[in-house]
Length: 274
Ligand code: F0G
Image 1 (cartoon, rainbow, N blue to C red):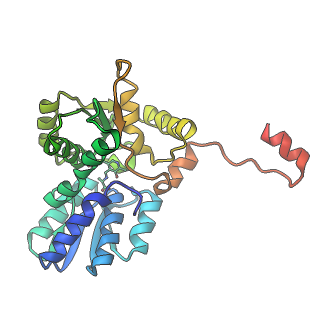
Image 2: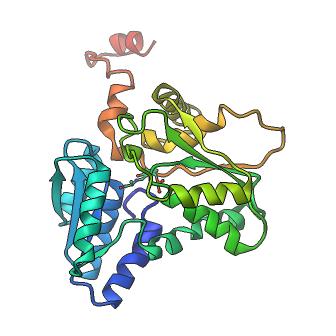
Image 3: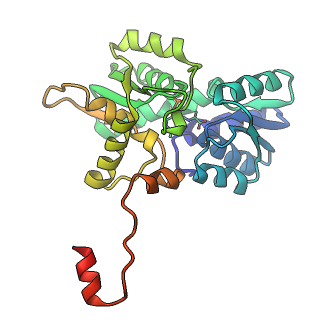
């Protein structure tokens, strides 16, 4: 409903917060978790406080959190600083923390694996996906493990320069699930792939131009990682595309051709259209 993969886990986390009598929910976010928390909290009748690194959140996500009635706090610091602060505040008791350190987020999120198996009729050989904090990689692993039909090789794709990547959704220096991701990779024989920003942008453009899929740049990290792999023909691969392109219209505009001004007559239009 909010245009990113976060909803799958958030609906469960907010339902459980409501059931447990939470007064409000809180999260730190690069934008998508915040928008999702804001939406589900609104529906549950709970206040939401969302902490976002100041000036580092894509405009579509920010607009969502604002419009959905969350209290949006612009933290003078990184996502990692914001997460630490929200964990500390939640520890004092008044807020339910709905970041992916909340187990219910992962339990909801893992259903993506069930859906993949259902859609394909089998476990894929390989699953590639962006790696920020690692909640999604952990949840996807758990889903396949719990489905009990075998494990795909996981390929979490992280930005080469985590702290400064243009893929702002995964601009996270200290992945909170790093140990769980390492364990998951040991079980399934996968490996983390590091992708530079220019390759993420190429993958992002190709998803749009060749598949008609307009996602936010971070979402294409898994595709960029796959391009570094030598795949056997016939390998069944799933790339999880994690967020809609309208989340980050400014980056999209910056990396796309500008509109061509044209007079409203057929000849100049034909010339400009090439
Ligand atoms: N893709 C998108 C579009 C995201 O928003 C995120 C994380 C990821 C991938 C990475 O997932 O952190 O579970 O490894 N966004 C978080 C947020 C950090 O606050 O919205 P991860």
